[in-house]
Image (tube, rainbow, N blue to C red; front, side, top):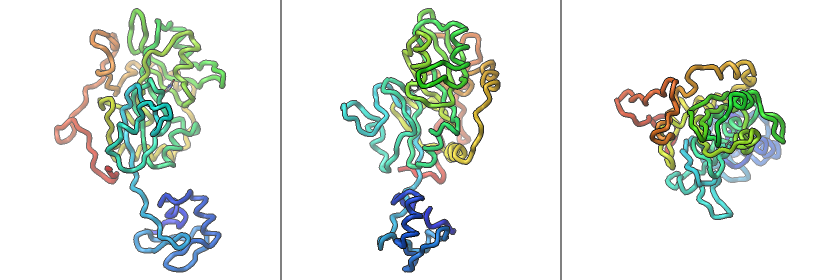
Length: 304
Ligand code: URA
C-alpha cells in the first residue's frame, strides 16, 4: 500500500507532518538508500526502507482508544505536582502512552476518552466540530423552569455567552435538582460556571456521553477499549465539518419525551430517589450476540 512519505514519518511518532515535510525538503530523508526531496512522494511502509538522518523509522505505534470511568478525586493528568491521585494510576496495565482527550475536574466523574491519536483528539476538542458532551448534574436547590430555560438559551459568562444547550430535568428532589445537560462546546468548568451564574452550586457532575460514546455501566475506576464501530464513529468526527446544530434544533430537542434514552443511570442514583418519575426508564443493557453482557473488544484496534 502506498502512503505519502511525510505521513509515514509522522506516523512513526518522530515529528509532525509539517516537520516531516521540512526534513524531506532539506534532503534528510532517504528511501531505499536514495535521498528523496520531492514532497508528495509515496512509499510502501511494508517494503520500502525509510531513514531520517541515516536512522530507520521506528514502526508506527498501534492506535489505541480507551474509555475510562473516572471516579471523583482523581486529576485528569498523568502526573500531579500536588501529589493527588491521577488517572495514570487507573491505567497501569496500559503499556502504550495515551493521553486524555479534554478534562474532567478533580471532583467530577464519568466518561473520559484517552488515545494516542493526536488528530482525533484535536478534532474532538476543536470548537469547529461541536462534539456534544452530556452530563448528569446534581444542583443545589430546586431549579425553576425559567432557570432551566436560561441554561438552554445560553448563560452570560465572563468569557462570553454559552451556546444553546439541551437541558432536561432528570429528577425531582426537595433539596437538590438533577438535570441532564448536553453542551456543544468545552470551556473550563463550563457546567459549574453556568450553574453558579444562576446562584446554585454543582453538587455532583458526571459525564455520561462524549460524541458517539456512552459510559454505559462501566464501573468507576475501570476502563475499556472502544469497539471498532465506536472508534470508527470517532474518526468520523475528524472527517466531518458539520455546522453546529441550529439553535432551534437544540431548543426543540429539549422537548423530547425521554432525554435519558440510552443512558444507564442505575448506579448513579441513590436508592430511594426517583429520577425517572413520569418519564420512560432507560433500557436495560441488551446481551450481545453470544448472550453475554460484556463488550466485544475484537477487531483492528490493539489492546495493550
Ligand atoms: N464542566 C465542569 O464544570 N467541569 C467539568 O469537569 C466538565 C464540565
